Length: 355
Image 1 (cartoon, rainbow, N blue to C red):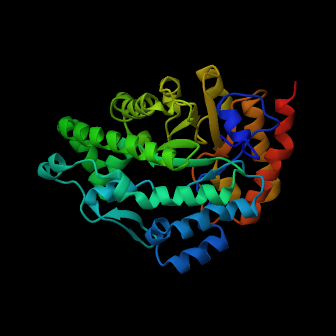
Image 2 (spheres, one colour):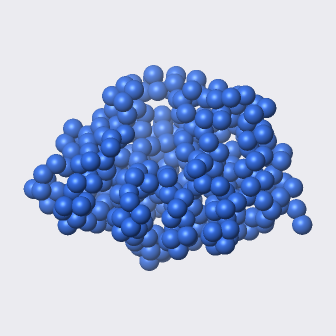
């Protein structure tokens, strides 16, 4: 494999010694950037942006051109591409987020659910990855990703995000057979999807479990974590054991010990969990990624510098930390404030990597 000009992110995922703490940002290509908004206007819609490899490449590269201190790129796409390929009819309403025209709301629809032809239906994703890899020219690694089986299922049953999850939870508690059927299909589809992303050029893959934190304690392990473990195990069995895997459950800090046994190389941590305590809990078994509150980026460079240093101090000395936000950057973030974050990490973190 051709070496990367900057491989600090990859070396951290393998717990190797690095000169500083690497950083990338969830949603680093997004609406807070004026150049992204211009490209989005040209594309016409969010889905058109995702499905056109040239636009997807352009917006993936935008934050890297603006912020040379980013240590990884992430594919510009959406977590709901799989259910869309299943025929659920993904669409976006301005200011309301993703919705499905054909949510799974009766037993017949659920029983008919099947794994789509991933290579054909989602070829636009793999074409985008190939195009992005070419544009990156081995500058930094590229992260591919998918939603978790549980998170995909919540959207597929609820029909949209940001709900109180009553439909899917009613199904979970009264017809667990139906939920498990959806989750098994999603698990096979996500495994295939991530494998195809790796084949197209992704250097790392991440599973976003955005709604795992909505589950009760016992149900999380049964209906979310167990299925993510299967994906990681399946990818390893398929020969991708050397591709690092990141698992992130938003609101999942109480399950970090169980997550550390998932087979993932790294775990995302949101801002509600103290990073130092998380490190002790997992006993340095895996890498931790996080965990600045994204809202801090709405303040000013002085406050941002202070908050970034607290996160770095909290993790402390040694390898195994990837700096990130505890969730996606908000669209209202002044771009210069992200610059303040990146400069602080790059200038302040080396002291924790000496000796």
